[in-house]
Image (tube, rainbow, N blue to C red; front, side, top):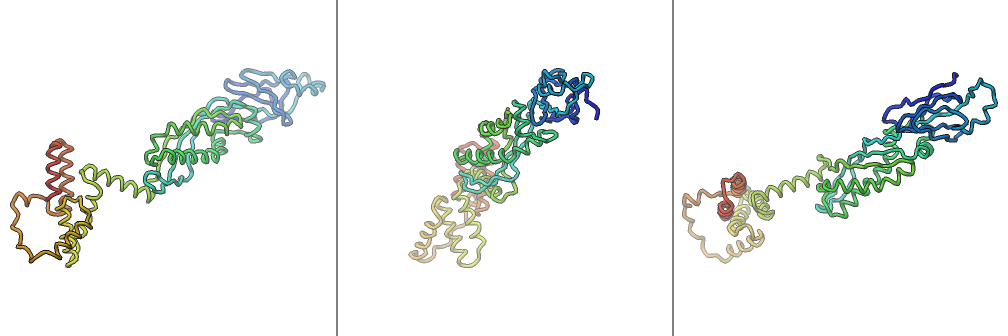
Length: 349
């Protein structure tokens, strides 16, 4: 095999370590090292170097292990066999990471088990080339960003899951609100992961969490989002959960047939007359007392006046009227006072 006269980097930018494909060198071989690179000669497991940026002629001065070969006559060129390793010391800031499967966490605010996923990127730089080659690269022909990400995936995911879970539990913050803590979480994880990479001569220059999310298709997530949307809707129209449930029960009772349905409907009607603030059970108790001690049936009530008839007459109509009223207020058509007055009239109708 011919002796190589010139050795230079021929790797791609995303490669951290690259081995020159030939090992046939001589004491006249020119070794070219670019800026932001370092080179090592490896003979018998011993690393000679580092060779920094510039042109280097391999001699016994920079490779002491060649002294014993000089006495062999080769016309001034002493051939030898050695590996040449280049290490790229430029920072790579675009290594992606992500949780391969969701983290199952109990939301501290809503007490539901929710699946959490996280994604981001990080940047590294080789700061100790010899340690990096010795402890991580080994006998591989090259070592790129994808290989590094694969090597540290297990450590990263373990740390990421732990820190995110701790942050959610410690702060008592909902999973749906944790996105406000991305910057502080990113900094915590960078500090936690730095020692693991430093062991291999790598500096973790940055670590970023781009998103923490929950899968929209998960049943628990759908249940929680539906409940939050309902709460927001009730807040807009201006009544609370108890009133909303009262409307729902009234609508259900109104659809029942027979004596039981009629009595239930009458009881709920009395509840509405009390302003929806009295529990249904209490209203039904009062109704039962009236039925037990009341005298003969009262005469039919007179027909409502046109003004009274204009008020919503069914639970469904009341709910819709309240929503329409809220829309008018949002558009500025009704003042706060007008909205409050009309809302009370509908609830008392």
